Image 1: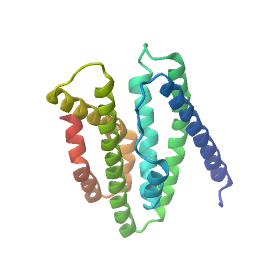
Image 2: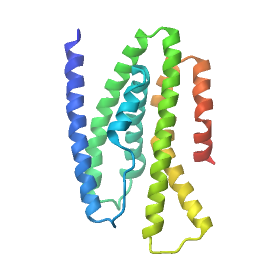
Image 3: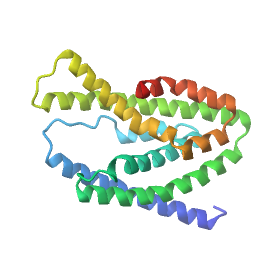
Image 4: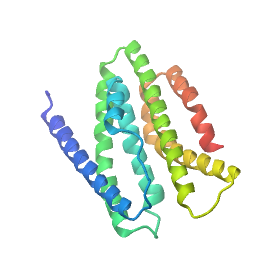
Length: 219
């Protein structure tokens, strides 16, 4: 509270995030109107938020920055260069990308501020919290990938054998892991800051915990 400029910046960021939530709720309704029935989002937002906020502030800020960065990677790699996407869809994500670019700067500042407050043993516990949060995200992705693959298989208008069905499930989960975890981890901006804040031993612990995910995506 001693820095009024910081307070104003964070309040504005919160306002924009609330606007974005409503924006994407509208997009969901627009998409649902043209989709076959039966699609489901399985994760309950309030439960996810409660689980995340139970972790240390350092870990929550690290995860938040990771999310801000992978949304930017997603726009640059798969939305911006695609000439066949809906112009409205691209426009929405262009302006969302611009906002997320600003938010990532604030996340970096807040993460550094929180890091400066931590004693080494507190940071070590926070690293475990961050590993746990990424594992929780992976669990949500596994659940949603299973449901989304089932939805596709049931409504694709084609009969799939057991081997094909297994390939669809594996491909969807691999794609979700790549987008929502690995793309952010591999972005130099996030990876460099994480390496700057933690010790080599802690970085090795993070790498070991994430190695199964990375191996699945790269395999």
